[in-house]
Structures are given as structure tokens and as C-alpha cells.
Image (tube, rainbow, N blue to C red; front, side):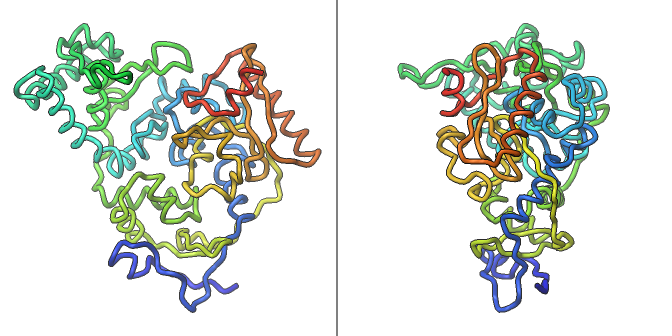
Length: 417
């Protein structure tokens, strides 16, 4: 089929209502088979990456909201991966950094890409968070001038980190009296409770790019992180980029890894408004293509060549893996399995993949054994490969038991079996 390049349509830029439907010009179709081939190659599932930095950059960040996810995602993508490889990159070499990014989600990525994500997504979280926190401080009688109180607390927090090195929230609270304050929500209700001020202040400072998560206090599955000033931890502040330029760069990188993607996919993954999504697409040389069902989607204009792979592959991916969570519209790889493999809030649990589609899920019993449950038939060769990968994962875990932060029906079933 001849390919006609199309930039973002004028109607898309003018009213923000979504892409114009394909006109009479020929539009390249990228079918489900090719989408699965692109996923296999570019997500390093058919061909492993050389190192954790390569995997993190290829995925435009590895999810890290659940501390175990980033380790298990790297294991699935990196040749001869050991936990120490990621710990060394995060805490010794600091060639990777854990940061707040798209959709208020934690990601592990390279410092260079962290600057892009910070300018395109993270910085926008700070102003509303600051306003919200000031309001709570004043409403709950902590201080009459919430802005001044918060400014002093934030400065004291960063000052103590510079003086003492990386510290946990509990350690900081002993040094900064303001962090020992409590915010009370839902008083008298079943869901009510207290939130430590340290949690809110540290979140705000992270959203502003002033501090980053350092080595956790516990093991590789611990989420009790220490904190450090960003410029001290990385040797320099995050690069300062214009928000529009950073947004365009983020879309460019993401479309190469995840494209073709619909407007809905892009908006969901970034957490942006329609207007911001349209502006980022318009700033790039993108091409509109067509999916199997005729829906319009986007790739970069220099990425229209057909992608194929003959290599068959299987993978056991963790909950919240960036591939499973990569698109909002998931039928082409997830099929009918969402009710068993996702929780009610749309968080993915552990999944079993074969040649670009989800065929089941996995979990662990109380004795840490890894159990696979297939949700659709696979051929004998694929079943044997899945079993081999199950054994490999069980050996890699070496008795460690990982419980996904967001529990799914299938994982609960396996645990109880």
C-alpha cells in the first residue's frame, strides 16, 4: 500500500475534538499482528536489552509505584539480570533515578529522560498540591498563614537533607518539627484517619524536583525510601526544559516505543488534557494511520516502515508492568481477561504473555512457589516455554515472596490455592 504522510489534521488543532476521520487519501493500516511485533521488539521482550539503563529508556521509564515491579520488569527484559544490577544503577552509579511522573506515578528512568518527564508532567503537579496543602494547614488550625508555614517547613527539610545526607521521612521528622504535624481527614467516618505532614511536604518537594527518592530503608521490595536533594544525589539539578518542548519530546519517545497509539491512549498514559495532547502532537512530525477496526492512531512520520519479527517469545510480567499498562485501549493484547487480571481501579496484576498477547496470569503461593494460570488455549510449544519461564522466575526469586500492591482476582485465587 502506498503511504501518504499526514501531519496532525487542522481540525484536530483547531477545536481539540480529536483527529479527523481519514479522507480519500490512502492511509497506512497497522494491524494487530504488526502492533504485537512492534511491542515484542521495542519493549525488549523478544530480544533482551543489554542493561537496565537501556530497558528503562526504551520503555520511557519502568513503573515503580510498587517497589518490586521495577525489578521484575527489568528481569523480564535484561540479559542475565540480577537485583544488584538495578540497585547499583539506582544507588551507586545513579545512572537511573526514581521519580514522580506521568499520572502521579513513580517511574525509574535515566536522568536525561527524568528532565523531560519533570518538565512535561511532574512540574504541573506542584502548584495545585501546594494550594491544597496550604488550605489544609489553615483549615485545620496548624497555622494562620499556611503559605509561610509551608515555605519554612520545606526549606528546613531541604536544609537538613543537605546537612545530614539521605534521610527517611521518620528521620526528617525528628529534625524538622513541622513534619511531626498531622492532618486529619474524614473524622468520625469509617475511611477517616491521620496523614503525617512529612508525607505531604515530601511529595510536594518531589513534585517540584527539589528532592528524589534514594536507597530504601529495607530490602528491594521496600517502599520506605530515604530522600536526598536532587542536585546532590545526581550531581546536578534536573535539566530545565520548556514545558512545550519537553511534552513534544516525551510524545516522540513514547510513540516510538508504544505507537501506533490512539489519542485516547496518549491522553491516558500522559495524564494530559486534550489541548496539551494536541499541542504535543502538533509539535511533532506525526502520521495518522489506521488500526484493524478503522480507528485512527498515530506514529512518528519516520516510523511508518513495517516492523516484523519471527521470534516467538513468552514473558511473565509483574503487576503494573509498563507494557501491560501502556495503553488505555487494550483489547488487541488483553482480550477478555481484564476482569481476572486487573483490579477495580484499572491496575494490572501479574500477567503471562505469549507472542504479543496476554494469555494468563501468575502469582505465588504462601511457600513462594510461582504458579501460572492460563486463561486461553496455547499450543504445546508455547506452553512448554511458559513453564520454562515460570521455573526461571522461581529460581530468580530464590524464596522471596512478592505480593502485588494492587491485588487482582486471579492473584488472590493463586495465593489461596
